[in-house]
Length: 306
Ligand code: FDA
Image (tube, rainbow, N blue to C red; front, top):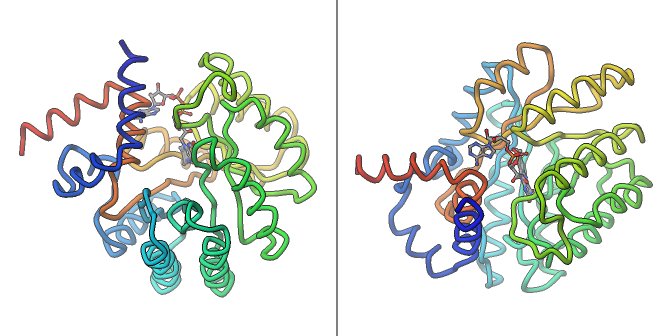
């Protein structure tokens, strides 16, 4: 039953018509539990609240299904505006983005052009931009573009690697020449057995493997998970191997396990919360429901409340 619900939500996440219909309902359907608000002002206020609790942030202007050059350039404008707003407010926050939002499915040149504009702005502010990893169809191209941008912009840019893919352990080795700052995650998309571990225990084992390897190579790791077993393992492993706390951080999603975020921050670990905002929340929200079908309960309650 759980697998069926997961597949249904992941199917819906990719459905463009449902995306448009959902947007018409604004932030209803319970999405506000996972999305900080419609605009950058709402998002900056949330960052300020987290910073007061000793937690840093990464902002994400939501957007998927971008098929026109104009939309892609507007999405890049939003990213530039977010970096400027973070700089002006003096809050502690990075930026995360998806390259399909910047025109990756239209042309690589368009996407690169937009990335240059965003990274120039980040560099000007001394900030950092993380490229989220999307579905498998965009994996290799994302890695190629990252390598190119990393050579141009150095530590201003980072990438995400997903433990559910068989190829990721090798990607960790190949990317090591750059000593990159990587966010390591389990993976949130629906992928076939031909490319991704179908069983959760295999994903978890590979996750531990790539975290340990990336850290042992001396590289910076953002361990992005709400899984307490994984988090405890990382705490133990880094202590046993004298890996300094400046070499890693824990990341979690806005609206999930804020108790654990506060606890880790109180223990002195760097904790970063991923804060999505904007009106195009549908795909992001469906993936959060797929991760934990129990979240549907929250949705039904908020729908009944109107
Ligand atoms: P797991 O799914 O095993 O969950 C462990 C526990 O966490 C659950 O038992 C539950 O208590 C809690 N939990 C997890 N998900 C929840 C939810 N939706 N609602 C409520 N509780 C939940 N993926 C990707 O493919 N590309 C990317 O770029 C990113 N980026 C990213 C950034 C950040 C900061 C995070 C935290 C995650 C991502 N992800 C991602 C998503 C990631 O791949 C993965 O789908 C989720 O983090 C869920 O996996 P966990 O590691 O939390 O473990």
